[in-house]
Amino acid sequence: MIKQLYTRNIGVFAKSATVTILSLFLVACGESDNASEPAENADAMASAASEVEEVAEQASQNDMAAAMPKEPSLSVEEAGFLNRDMVMGDPNAPVEIIEYASLTCNHCATFHNNVLPKIKEDYIDTGKAKLVMRSFMLNPIDMSATTLSRCMTEKRYVPFMNMLFSRQMEWYDVGKYQELSANNDPQTANQMFIDATMTEVQKYARQAGMNKAKIDACLANEDIGKYLFEVQQYAVEQYKVNATPTIIVNGNKAGNDYNSISKAIEAELD
Image 1 (tube, rainbow, N blue to C red):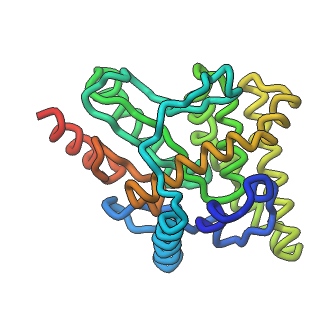
Image 2 (image 1 turned 135 degrees about the horizontal axis):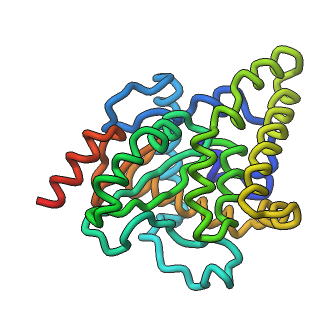
């Protein structure tokens, strides 16, 4: 699945329905190397890690090595989407926390719902740290939902992401997929699940102020996909990201629990 993110045409991938149950629910959604909890599926994670290494090697061989993300040449207004890092907190805070997350990963929802609020209260709101929110997409649903987030206004980006994470079990219903797969062939079940899930995500997008025309135009905008893939490629090559959520504190991986992140932040503040 990770390999698909780099090798398949962006437009085709965004509309693809031929994904397996493994890639939809397991691959790369778990804890990173330095995290405190085990991954949900060790074999799937090992496979994902292997693909990450292979993709990075192929990218290097093809002279596609990711450079440090550059300041976008176009403004948000000119680009027509949020073409830069979304930062929570003071941009000049001494400690930078980078979060690589997937909207369809339950571990990421747990981080956003249970861990981030305390980090925000203790470090972000006090000006000690800032949070850079970056996407690490795992499947076509993830890509489409993430694409929609990039068509929000800057003011609505974080609330929209928070809404999707807090209500993840409502719109990304594993039980629904199991029901569909019991009554349909795998390809049909996958397509039906993707369609049903994106219908729910688009409802949230409309609640956040997007109309149908803007939603359709957003999902058809391949420049957003190119931007997101560049961010993801950089994550793989610079930080060896192979799971979500992955937390980076001033350039170093940390666990995704409060104590690990707090310890890493305090070490940087000393």
